[in-house]
Length: 170
Image (cartoon, rainbow, N blue to C red; front, top):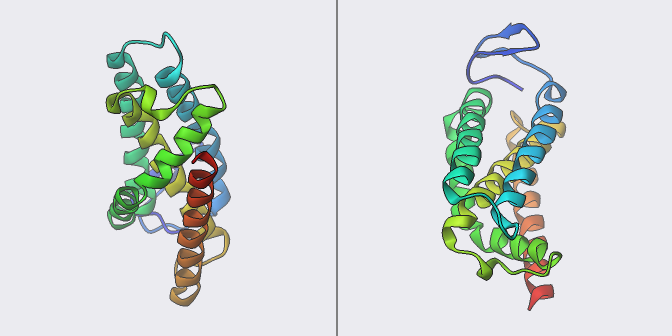
């Protein structure tokens, strides 16, 4: 993958335009964001969770740091695509959050919209990372034809999963 900005990984500096293998980026971020996103999810939805201000400080700071890394690694245009995709995918996000909460005997509607912001944002960041990983694992970043197929499969697969989860809940 070609870096869109300079970054240091394990003490080694990589400059904008340098190519680094996908496995130097995705395993770290998938694990790290999974842990932070999971803790943000638990804090947001546990019974007597922390005050909303703490949730926003903890999760908001982490999301800001991830955004900085995303812009550096993927570039502004890809991050812009992430937010466009998020705006279109709120249905899927809500359906999956509701399904996850149902495993704990709760519903998304049990919480105010303000509580959902951080878990939803983590979800957007995580699904964007998964999409970028699929693009790189299948060497589609610079192959337009392959990229179109990967993007179409990703969108179609997401709609199928979101729809199935939503239907299972209703």
